[in-house]
Image (cartoon, rainbow, N blue to C red; front, side, top):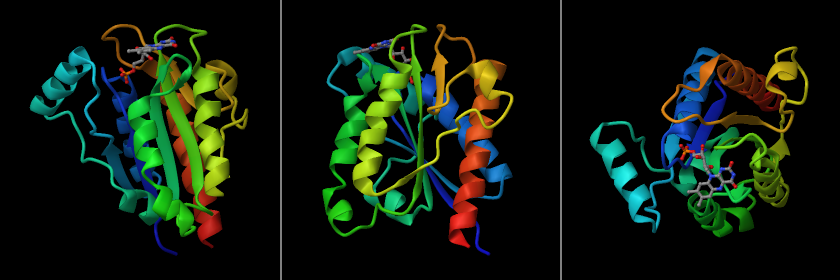
Amino acid sequence: MSAVKLAIVYYSATGTVRSMAERLAATGTSAGAEVRLRQVTRRPSGGEEQATQAQQAEAGQGHEGVTSDDIVWADAVLFGSPTRYGNVAGQLKVFIDSLGSEWGQGLLADKVYAGFTSTSTQHGGQETTLLALYNTIYHFGGILVPPGYTDPSKFVDGNPYGVSHVAVESEPIGDVTTTALDHLVQRVVRIAGKLNG
Ligand SMILES: Cc1cc2nc3c(=O)[nH]c(=O)nc-3n(C[C@H](O)[C@H](O)[C@H](O)COP(=O)(O)O)c2cc1C
């Protein structure tokens, strides 16, 4: 049986979602998946975010830019976005909206999908962001694999919709979020492996 092909596709302006994506990639690789870790590189219009991304690139913290081929290639896709007013960041949405041709050819269907997000406040829209992202997955004909409460650790991080983190300035993402990310990616790889047969 061939390895599950896992694409982790994220947008991050200040690094939290990037840290989450990197953890998913490391654990996904340990779980036996072939991983593509990709970022949305489109520059946001805000000058401050532009500067942040440029600094990250300079520090070698960026990852290869995502293309439609990464989604078509994958058996499973994890999308990550910071909350923007309780919604998916426009940068990730612009990438998703560029996939119309692949959608029209049915190339986005029958894959496993799930999401991860980050906010600056506890009730700042984590669940709404994930649910907004998942609207798209239904249109893809994707197979949503949310974590639910399928592990005791889910009663600790408390988000059955995906993985979410409340970012505290320059602090690492910490054990609760890391455990939730590990659980999500292990579950996604396991279920995508079953679908691969
Ligand atoms: C335009 C804008 C809108 C935001 N909206 C929210 C929001 O609705 N709720 C919230 O808690 N945080 C909000 N934030 C904060 C970010 O979602 C949060 O800092 C996130 O952790 C950043 O992730 P990143 O470090 O990967 O960029 C917003 C930030 C910006 C720039």
